[in-house]
Figure 1 (cartoon, rainbow, N blue to C red):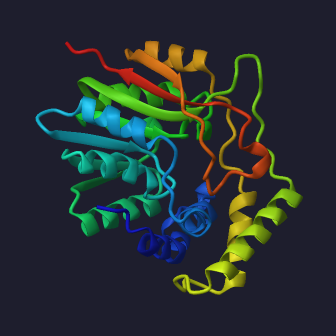
Figure 2: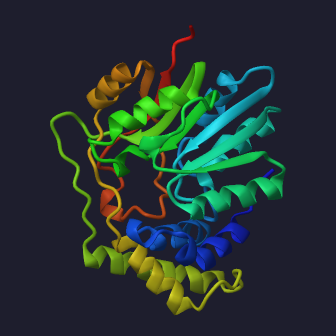
Length: 285
């Protein structure tokens, strides 16, 4: 099994302008994430594949795992949920949840291409329907997109969507206590990233034709200039939010060192905050 990223990148580039809600301002983000990931890093998955594989297998029952994807930039988070566990012989069923239709449609197409059962729910993470009975909920860098005011409802929604004994699995950069994280996108950094992408396109030469080079570069620049995340997330916040939602913090561990392959990150941002792998559990009755 492998993520059909070339086809999904073409889909999101073509369809995000129609599927993304203009009020959310996410069309450039969802239009370009898969394509930049494909061109720049040959489709490398988001950080944490060994962590998610290990923990999803641990949360499974009778060789099966029901996994809820709590937000996604593209199909990469779904790949984290299904590629490793499926290779280990686990049958994975996916519920993809996001407020935007573009990543939901990518998840549906990915499942159709690879024979993975996929349900989609279009809603905000602060309004997750209860009773999903998920074995595992996974989120990748999602808390930085959420203001403090929404997070209690998100954690409560996670608790309500888990089966007793189920787990929330997060890969998240945490801001050290007492510090502040402010995302900046200087024009010179965006221009540098654009030039690097242009060189990569030239080097590929025979890459799948999706659009004119100039259109891809213009959309990439709009993508990198977008301000969609940047909220502080601290370990103490994780502990407090989990406690208030009735979740137990099983572990908050610093992730192994790895080069960032984020399509969205600019060079000067890459090592500001440690990435952590977080396990929360809903106690069994």
